[in-house]
Length: 166
Image (cartoon, rainbow, N blue to C red; front, side, top):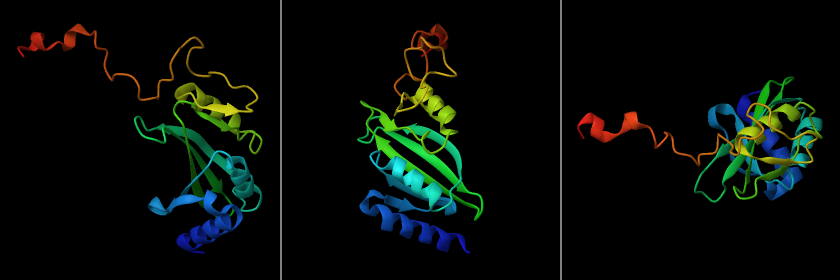
């Protein structure tokens, strides 16, 4: 079956089940992408796994959009290995209260991915069995992938203009 036709079928089935909770549908490079909401994300993921045979959770990560209304996007990549189809789901959450239900109830493998996303972006996965840092130090008071920090240390003396005749 052609990729676009398959994506259209998947989209139609999602809209039939979830209605207006499936928005911003696009197909960059043939990858079906849509936005949903945190109150239905577990139901959407369960439906994709059980009914539409997206049997492999490839990745969970986040994207920070500083200064914008939607703040942080939690991004899920799923794969239907039988029909060889991939899908991307985005859920936008508040930067001030970055919480979303855990996907470990659907895939046990989400455990590590959610811990990594928590570690780097500060996203709190509600109901996660062991949400703690895995790559950064426990006492690190920041989440390094959030774009809240200057790119360079302002105290570096080798970057002062007066040393370069400016």
